[in-house]
Image (cartoon, rainbow, N blue to C red; front, side, top):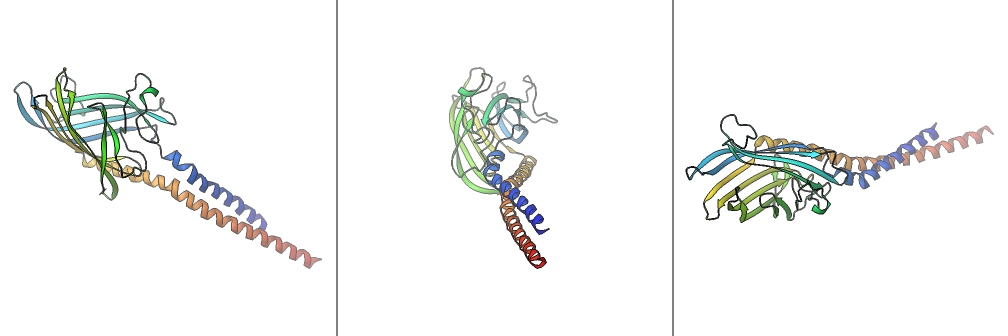
Amino acid sequence: MRVIVGRVLLGLGAFLLVAGILGVAWAPGSVKKTPVEVDQKTDLTGTALRLDTSTGETRELEVKYTSITKSDTEASDDDTVYFKQATCLVEVDGETPDCVDENDDRLISAGEATFATDRETAMAVDGSKLPDDVEPYEGLVNKWPFDAEKKDYEVYDNVIGEPVTARYETTDEIDGLEVHVYVTETVDAPIDLGSDIDGLYSDRKEYSVDPRTGAIIKQVVDQQRSLADGTQVLDLQVEYTDEEVADNVADAEDNIASLDLLTKTVPLVGFIGGALCILAGIALILTGRRTRTTKAAHSS
């Protein structure tokens, strides 16, 4: 009986050791990837000073900014995930939807984009590798990589159509979650304000990022747009809503727990449990054989 139990323990121990090895060697590279099924809505609220072109005066507005990002699951593969993103900035006036028609005076700006990122690095995919209907971005786009470091990263700014440096500033805490804070700054970059009107663009963004998953937990935007002569057209200050931040923290904590289960708990249980089972199995087999030998000697 001891020999049988010992063999069972040997088998169980071998299984646990294999699980531990997979947890160390396979799990990190497999689970630390951007999922191919993403459907995310991001809400920012704040205020803006906006030039009224009919009167030449600037009005202060309550505004909200909505970004909806969805992955193209069919086009995505093991290495690349394709996204479609719609953004909208509107003036809040009573019951205001996330976006309004282009002829609605509440609309400040709106846009759509299709892009692709590397599932491991979160960096935009080289334009030469993309189909014609996917825009060639550069740098990070909608998240940081897993295990984000305390260093500078390049982040794509779709207003100027090129990446800007997101410098690492500090490590902070939001609702008990440790985050890395990165800041981008652009000053007086030339842009088209629309209708072929030349303008200038200044922008400061602060990203609070969960370093474990690369998820953006909070974002604060301070942006100005002006005519070439310096006349201010837009002065915008928005940030993630409190509800958005709370949801992001909860999602990050759930994802961290899943990562820890696969990359820490499973290997720990596998190696320790597997070793104990194998040692116990060997001990039972040896003692079982000794018992059989002793019984055989006595009976003879």
